[in-house]
Length: 335
Image (cartoon, rainbow, N blue to C red):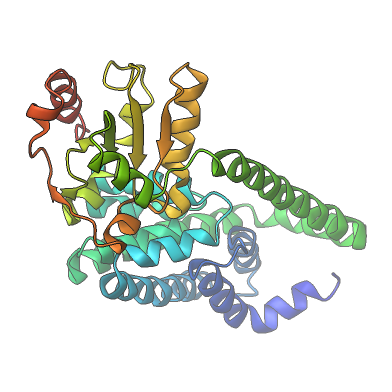
């Protein structure tokens, strides 16, 4: 640890570029401590304050433009790939989509400050076909705010941070072991909780083949399309007869799911985790006949099963549900 400061003084700009680039590309290595450190070194005159900000912003933009272009090319498939690497894939996608649906390009001003969302927000901008000029404007401002805030913090409190660094250097390996151990325990806990949850929901799923057989047999099933509004706008088709209700609305104890019919929920989230979590919560409230569709709408299409425009024939199939669904949809996109 005694060599850290001299190394950063000599190679600080290169380290900063590589570190910020790696985090914004999706690796779990937080840049905030480094941004604060280089800011403190700038406050002591060892590094240039404005060059530190410029290097950090440039690194973030290189990564963001890459993910934006990949989002335009690959579409929603890219989000699933990114979030399968996350410990909380449903959360990182769903929360980011909510922010995008509410604020649009302006959300890029804040997503880098929100853990787990930065790696999703830039490809999502490409998936939604945001104009490149608009993306570059707001993403540049967001990167500048993110990098500038932490570098400025380190610059202003450079003396106090110098004392902290000296203290930390004195602790040596003990400080490193404590930090590494805490991070390892956090990751293990998230992993164990996620595996436990996936095991709990594995027996609750219904396959596309099973659902198709039930629908063809005329079984009284309520099929709910719980995709996010951004996904629905990109593909406004549903499984025949499906009701269109967002996931957040499904978690309320509404009449639309509060009956004795079998309920099937589908979305576009990785491993249908979001719809499965809602299914489990509804079961805890006494609504037992609710199951997530394995693979969601993508798996249904993969079997070449039919889809139809949303709301088609719903009034004939579920006449007692239409009013509840209409009231939900009227408030779905409200800010």
